[in-house]
Length: 296
Image (tube, rainbow, N blue to C red; front, top):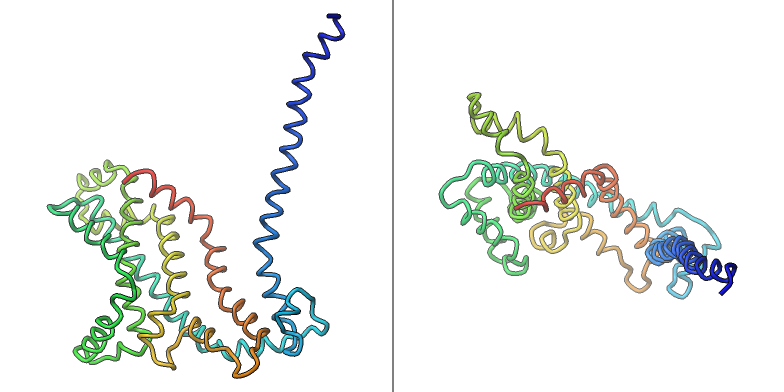
């Protein structure tokens, strides 16, 4: 074999590797682009249909751009959804904050202030995650009525009762997230605060809370999304004047002609708050999840 042939033989694997690397650089972005397009197809249909007049909003024309662009559907959808959006804000904002605070306290005690039976208590907390909504609807309604009568307040049929139900039902998952996150905090910090004379609450306020941002972000996003998107509890526990966004959205329907453009506009309006929460807190979300997944 000549020297030239030997050089060609040795260079051939290198050339193939370079071609494979170049192909991979193009294939990955192309696949990602395909996935993005497929994912955005429903969004395209939502947005395009929401700007169509009722005469054009038909399933047979779902892919077509509007011949006449109009915001009438947005105006009607906002008028119909506005009371529900207000109710959902009154439900999800305080409910997610209360859930985060209670979960933080529970997780702190179960991870840093061990007591006899702590593992059993934590197991019982986790058991609450596996109780289906449908299995507690009737006793929950009876509890809300009886508790409201005992306290002299109206829990059943209003936002306070719905908030209470979501907070109680969210305590297990909130406790789990905070407990697993706090396990990653060195015990030496808590021991040092005890040596300095700090009690349980002082240690929690001065040592634990300042580093709890990612865990709070995870819990707030989780609970806010759960409360905002809830439908079953809302139907059972609220009166028409207290219906949140999901129930109002379900009721946007025509008697004989379905107002697709109004439904699409209403769906976009109903999803905006959760998207805003993810945009504001999303950078902490994965950090909190990964920190809580390392131990515990």
